[in-house]
Amino acid sequence: MSSPNSASAALRAGNAPQLFPRQIAVAILAIVACCFAGNHVAARLAFEHGTGLLVAVLFRSGVALSILIGIVFFKRHSIRLPRGLGRWQVVLGLMITIQSLCLYSAVARVPVALALLTANTFPIILALLTWTLGGPRPTLRAAGLMLFILSGLVLALDLPAILGGGAEVSSSWWLGIGFALMAATALSVAFWVTDHKLAGISGPVRSMFTMVVVFISMIIAGIGDVLPGGMSLPNATPGWMGLLALMLLYGGAFAVLFINVPRLDMARNAPVMNVEPIATLLFGWVVLGQMISPNQMLGGLVVVSGIVILTLRKGA
Image 1 (cartoon, rainbow, N blue to C red):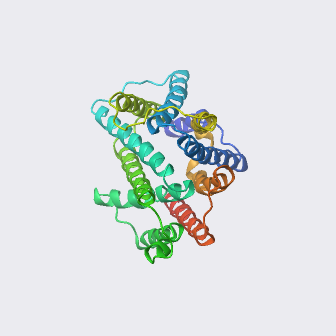
Image 2: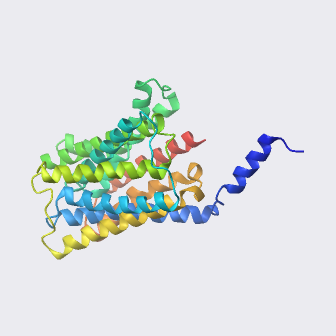
């Protein structure tokens, strides 16, 4: 006769959704990553034709919020937050708001692939933040990987040529890179809050409230004219196409990811999502004509490879 523990374990296993075969899960995650990459390229196209930053984030978060509300109510999740966690949910929402605004601000100023590569260094900031707030200190191997990633970022940004006077960039370029680093920092704080304060809340519910905060923040910022021109609509057809594309690509990827995440074995397959900067590089070239040098491409590959290795180590 089986024990109650083994019986309950079997029951949980029976109720768990069946995982996709790995090749299908990898294909789904690769498509989702490409959609997220396309969203950033579409955003740059929209910005180049008069679209305001707040409008882009407002429309994108509105689509994501609609999808999450549907998921939460279709699956009948409780939307009551445990006592004392409301303020942390607001902090999470504000961090994602800042991350969205900063990343789109970077995309509007520098080549999209460079903005994404810089922002994707957030695992380094997260590891240091976790250590600072009382978590485990990064191992020597992890520290080496961080330096490896940073060396790739130096190459990707072509900093030796810029600092040596061999390449000129505008103050807007430096501002864009600064915004990308701010986006990485905000995302790191968001992950820390999620892992250490809100881990007990259902993922769709947590994400729904996060998008509520983002959506309301954009409306308040627009009414208060916090960013002059932030609520401007596109002034040409390509701008409308970019705005529509970023909504559809982000919303579609968001929906596919959240609906299928229980079947995607994320602990094993999540590193596939790191193809996003590479896809951004390709889409940026095809749609926007943005090119980077071979050395910068090499640096980008170093960054992506280092992040994948770091992710695999944490998942091990």
